[in-house]
Image: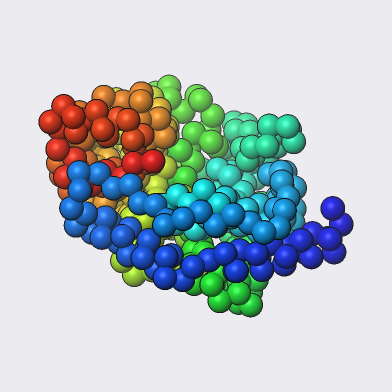
Amino acid sequence: MSPESLESTLRECLEDLERRMDDAEESRLMGEWRVFAEGRHDGEYFMPRRARPAPPAVQWPKVRVNQTLESPAAMALQQLGQCSDRLAAGDGFLLNVRANFGTCILPSLFGAELFLMTDEADTLPTNWPLDAPSLARVLEGGVPGLRGGLGGRVLDMGRYYLELFREYPAVQKHVHMYHPDLQGPMDLCELLWGSGIFTALIEEPDRVKRLLGLMTETYTAFMKAWREIVPFAPDFNPHWGFLHRGRIMLRDDSAMNLSPAMVAEFVVPHDQQLLTAFGGGAVHFCGRGDHFIGELAGMEGVHAVNLGQPEMNDLETVLRHTVDRGVNLLNLPRAMAETAVANGRPLRGRVQVS
């Protein structure tokens, strides 16, 4: 698709999205999410829905991830296509978009080489770990320039969305921009160091902590730069179609490989620094994390937890450390929630199900 054709298609699809949005319905849905995020939902679990599906009146094209990495218009079309799908399904997820460059945004600032997936995979890129001399140079340096690597493209994408949405009042009001994927300090360390970091935690703990400190500083600097372009809402912010109290969604996928004691020593202090700096938020992890969820959910300012694979975790342990402590649980499969309720397990209105 030529740039001119892409721009024309984007405008056509934006007009379609604008026509399909029901202001009262989107406002009602946001109100329900706010009640849930505040911990005031009066059912056992929260399963929001729009009143009716709103199918598209035009053909939205399939845009592959690799196309979006070089073209703001292609990225906007791909991200807005997900909003179109939400309206067509009539589900209860909020409409949102992001600068969608994957987990390698901050690693790219340090010169990490990108690893692009095939078009057939249609998956976001990651990065190769640094070699030993490059990692040593990173450890001796400070926070890199924020427009290096993918940084400039990410920040410019935020500005692009703001300008693009200005002509579409309903889109501007109801399609929210959530922050780019900056991961979390430990995840960033693994992305730069590679899997050798897990032995380094034992053999070179002070060196790992130096890198963790640098990742925390870099995350802070970049998120502040993003915040200057797209300010956070004061109390509640969207992420992946959810709404949570606070402002950031930290990722702690690497923690699945660590003991609770290691999480407490290496992960929690740096996550806590970010939560404090940005006014709290939520935590996500993939895989099994019921062995360390107490450490994560116990941090000050954690208001919600999102599990990438809930079925890999002991649900009772998860609930004990989240809903029983006033922390919301996001995106639990409905069958798991219904089974818990049928077995007499209170969910306290703090579990959102899909």
